[in-house]
Structures are given as structure tokens and as C-alpha cells.
Image (cartoon, rainbow, N blue to C red; front, side):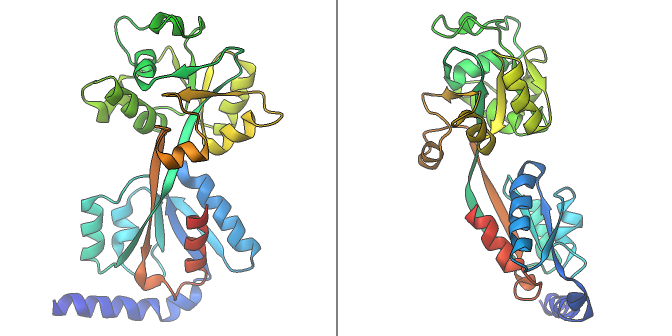
Length: 280
């Protein structure tokens, strides 16, 4: 206990000394799918004349965020998953005190330029995307009530949000097994990987009747007044803010902020940046 107190005191002295005064910006580690959210909040912070934010990848958390307290370490992490026990233990071992903040759900969904209307169940979606021996070619092969159009979905790949959000939820709804690894069982002929959200939105317009997988902000931008895409309903619900908040829309994930308590009040603009992330 005495060693832990001594180590923490030393770290705090380092933070409040010359290193702290030398740091004039916030450092955030961010999951790649939340870079957009983090960047918008950073731009807002800078436009207010408060400070700048340096955004880096959330990889190797134990060796960066959790390596200790001080101006040479990140101030916060923004994740699309909870901090793991191993990561939390690593932070605790280095004297890092964490304030955890759970944010609202980040929703994703589908849109299409098809003239047909799509209302899919998660189980139907799993039949369309899973790599089975009798993989259907057309949506109507799954259910005659669905459009007689070829199954083609442009998504962000196994390492993006399509796997952990869509594949896992669809697998579970269909009563599948090993759904935590469902992203490894996706069709490659029907699931076409395009990493950029903006590129997928453009593809959706150009390659009807394909479905494109997009974050909600881009869905709204391309399906609102003047938009050329139509929303695809999942389990009867469109990905509106109301449906996401109520839980009626199933394709949403939580995001989390973990802030070093010792950096709050010391690193200029840190609290303001956290408040901006919470408000978006």
C-alpha cells in the first residue's frame, strides 16, 4: 500500500510539474469507428479557442493509456467496447485512476437506391450474409415477400462495425452458435468490403439495388430531403434517433469514455472535450 501511494505521489508530481505546463493539448486514444465523433468534438473545442486535441489509435491501450499518469501519456480513451479486465488491471497497477462514462448507442443501418421497399428481420439478414452451403442469391429466395433482387451488401468488412454489430446480432436472432465469431462466417460473394463510409454512400446510389451499410448520420444525410437512398427497416424499425433510444432498432452499439482522473483540472481543455463528447 505504501509503495502504491509513493508511486502515485511521484506520478502526480510529474504531471503537475514541467511536463504538464509543456503540454498544450489533449491526447485521446480512439477506436477507429469513433474517429468521426472524436474529430467533430475536437474541431468544436478548437473553434471555441480552448485547446487542440491529438487523436491516435486505440490500439495497445495497456502500453499507452495504462502505462501511467503524466503528460507523456494519453488523457482519455473513447471506445466502442468496455475496457477489458486486463486493461483495467494494467491501469490500476500503474496508479491510473479512471472515470468511466457510458455514452448513448451509436447506430448503424442500411440504405438502398432500389425502387423496392425493404423490411428485413435479423434472422432473414443472417440467412443472406452467412456462408452456408445453400446461400440464397436473391432476397426473395429467403422469403417470397422480399424483393426479387440480387443480394449485394457493401459493408466495412470483418474488422469494421459490420461484424460485431450486424453479424453477431443477426446470428443470435437466427439461433446460431458461436455468434461472437460470426464475422468469420460471412459470405464473400454477397458482402463486398468498402472501408470508407463516404464511398459506400456513393456506391449505394450508383449500384442499385445493392444495400449499403452506414452510420446513422450518413444514413440521415443521404435519405432525407433531396437524398437518393431509402432506409431499410430491421425488425420493422427504421434507424431513427427515437427507435435507437427506445431500443426498438436493434443495430446499435454503446460507446465508452475512460478519463484519467489525475489529468482532469491539469490538462487544459480536457474536461471541456469530455463534455463535448458526451453531448454528441
